[in-house]
Length: 412
Ligand code: NIG
Ligand code: FE
Image (cartoon, rainbow, N blue to C red):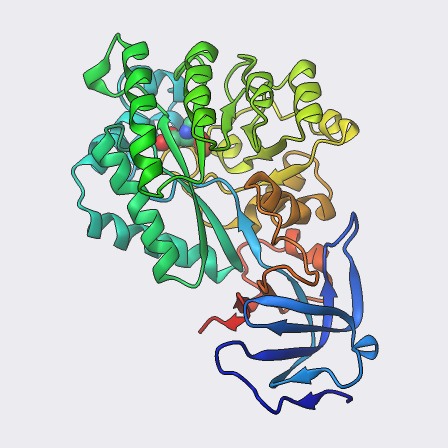
C-alpha cells in the first residue's frame, strides 16, 4: 500500500481512502465497473477514483476504510417527490379499486384537494416530523439527494411553510434537498371558477418565495384536471423573469403539448409522460430536457398507457426514474422498487433504470456535481450487499443498502 499518513491531517477536511471496492461509477454510458477499486475523498468531494493500483504514489491519506470487496455506486437521487403533506387517502384508494377514476375523484373535490385541506391545518413541526420519517425511509435505501415539491398548500403562507419544511429537512438530515415550487398543482377552493386569477396569485408569490431562498425550480401540473398550457406558460414566464429553472408534470392523463411548452423554456425535466407524442419528444431532445418516468403513479392509478420509452431512447432523451411519493397516486417510499418497476412496467433495461436514479436524476435537477463517481464531484456513495449493480433493479421488498456516505461522511 503506497498511501502515507498525512502530517497535518485537518479534522475539518479529512482525506479518506475507501479501498477494496467493486465500483460501478456510472461515469459514461455503461456501469463504469472497476474491480479492486478505490475512492479518495477530500472533505465533501471525491479527490480521486480508479483501480487501487493506479493511486498516485505518496497520496496523502488520513483514514483508510477497507470495503471488503463490496459493490459501491453513486448515492441515489429521487428527483420527483411531494414529500411534505399531512393526512392520507386510503379511502380514495378503496374508491378507485371499486371503479372510480383519479379524474372523477379530483373533479368531485377529492384527490389533491383532500390533501390540501389536511395540509393547511397542520403546523410546521407536525409537517416536519411526518416528512422526516418519510425522508429517512428513502435514505435507508441509499438516497442521498431528494427533490421535494410544494403544492399542497396553495396559499402563499402555506406554500412557504411546505418549502421551509423541505429546507429544514436538508439542514437537519444527512441528505441534500432540492425544492420545487408547485403552486400551480391544483385550483384551491377559494378560486373555484377563476383559474386565471389563481395563476396571477401564484406568479405574484414567486418573488417573495425566491427572495427567502425557498425555490430551486418551478413546477406546474398541466392537464385537463389542472392547468392549461396558456396558464402554465404564465407560470414559466414568471419563473424565467427570476432566473429560476422550470420543470413540468406533463402528459400524464392526456397530451396537452405540455412537454413542448416546457422544452421551449429550457425545462430541466418533464415528468410522467404517458401521453407524450413525437413533437414533445423532439422538443425535449432539442432542449436537452430529461424525461422523468414515475412508475409508482402509473401502477397505483392502474394506467394502461406506458410512456414512449423506445422513442425517447431512440431520440437520445435522458431518462430518469423517481418515486413521485405523494399520498394520492404514489404512496410508496422505495426508489429501488421504482427502478424495478421501470424495468418490468416500462421496459427500461437495468442499466437504464440505474442511470435513471443516479446520473439522469441529477440531470433532471440540474445538478452537475453528483450522480456519478468521478473526481471533483460530491462524495455521495452507497455500499451495497450485492454482487452486481444490475441487482439494484432485481430484488424487491429487500433493502441491500449497507452503508451510505454523504459529502464524505458516513451516515450513522
Ligand atoms: O405527480 N399529477 C399530479 N400530482 C401528483 C399527484 C398528487 C396527488 O394525487 O396528491 C403526481 O402524481
Ligand atoms: Fe408528481
